[in-house]
Length: 355
Image 1 (cartoon, rainbow, N blue to C red):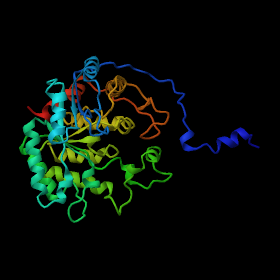
Image 2 (cartoon, rainbow, N blue to C red; image 1 turned 90 degrees about the vertical axis):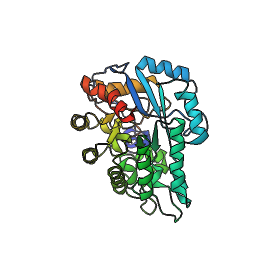
Image 3 (tube, rainbow, N blue to C red; image 1 turned 30 degrees about the vertical axis):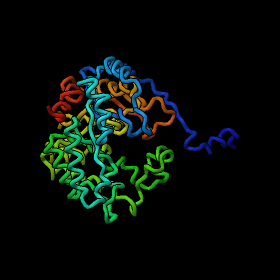
Image 4 (cartoon, one colour; image 1 turned 180 degrees about the horizontal axis):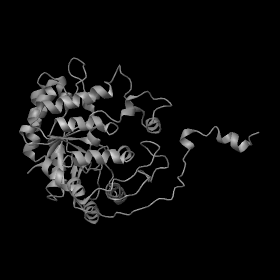
């Protein structure tokens, strides 16, 4: 007969179960990137922080960057108009070469009769002010609607024309389409991101009466990219499909102007390190270093360097969290070669960002 102790354990709730690995494994500290790094995907502005600057002390951030060998951070929070101007003043103009700010577009303007023209004008204005690129967020395809009430997907003809214009202006486009595949699956006991979705219920997009499927959104991304060969793209979060690198490789093969960043996807890429290395070996000039860590910390940069450079296996991708937020597994490092590291940390970003 089970003791009361074992009977109680049988009813432990999911959120209470926080196992600790008993594996004795190599731990490699990587304090600095082996090559000067460009973080192509981060957030420094006010867009995601209720009007407060994401970074309160820019001088302290620069010290952190110097200590970790991060040459430049690309901030995706420029927005447009006066907000873009404020970001450019605070970062790009005050510290040339250390920060590059991307603008955004107010896609809700497509609900207006002249919305497409207004978006083009906004791009012209942002480029003239000094934006170094354009960030397209996942609301395009998930929530943005036009005057008819229809969702506007990334392959909408109006979107295609606007992003073709970004290419004409020389602005690279970092685009985030959809979200992790599990966010589009039933929110049930089989969903591998259930821990996360229980904390962030509005991240679930599995209601097909309200949202397109994951596959439809990724197909729309591919259609958009192929239709605009004059625009340089960075597919955020491992090409927006870190769980399906076969799909990502097909778009990389079909579109030489398409690259990907690794931002926010260590959890996905680190559980398939050999497969991801194969992608890097096939497309060595198309993978960019990015983190999507905010607020920025030394510990997070060191964790990313460890992932790229070391041989370590089965380590926590979120060591500060009792329950790993993006899935209950550990990750293993890539142990990339020096040429691969130089390209991913810096060389590929320089090519995509342009002069």
